[in-house]
Length: 137
Image 1: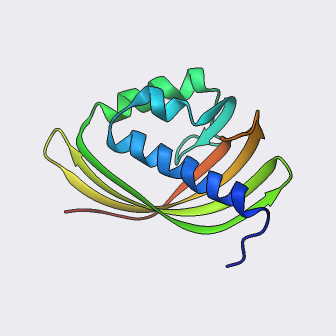
Image 2 (image 1 turned 90 degrees about the vertical axis):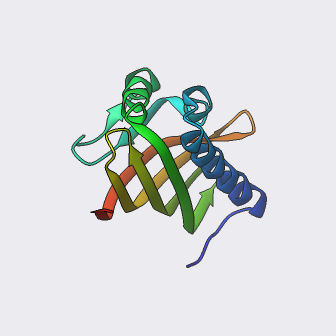
């Protein structure tokens, strides 16, 4: 794994992912949405090329999160490549999902991310999620 680009930018991108994960675990839609560009794309299994625009995917996220009583959401970083005000990174995600109906699932997935730096801050421009493994416990 080789990351490239200024260490300050790579650290800021790691903090962006940590902010995202923290918001998921706290069910905080406002904090979660603040990590995205307004015209970002969120691609999940079954969404084709993804859902474009925060105004479209934040309500979907809120609805999905309403079905959980607990979410453990942890990322392990792959390479981060920064080129000027854009970047790309890979993240491996471990999810512990406790649904309100009593079902519990463990999911391991991978995010392929594209980022944009605007006004000195990094944002998600595109997140593409793939489930690598899922099981009910």
